[in-house]
Amino acid sequence: MTLLLVWLLNAVALLVVAYLLPGITVASFGSALIAALVLGLLNSLVKPVLVLLTLPITVVTLGLFLIVLNALLFWFAGSILKGFQVNGFWWAVIGAVLYSLISGLLSAIVPN
Image (cartoon, rainbow, N blue to C red; front, side):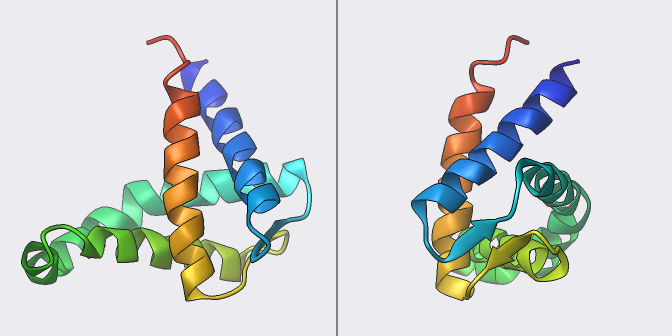
């Protein structure tokens, strides 16, 4: 039940990001649900491998390269999904940071 609620809140966070940033568009709430699911899967399956492969550059940049990884995954999700679009790398950087902040705040209200 908690996982479903977090998924819904992540979709809402994605809609808020699309509302705030003109370079990110989400067609509908259904598209936001699918995009939130894909982002969750990318972050849980692909991101750990990428973090491991880019560990040297992450150490050299004191962890700031993780923002680039988040942006690349956000941008990738926007390029493979129909109803979710990210118009460029810098919109992906801003969108990924904002999405992380908003979804983190919304997830904080979910009881454990």
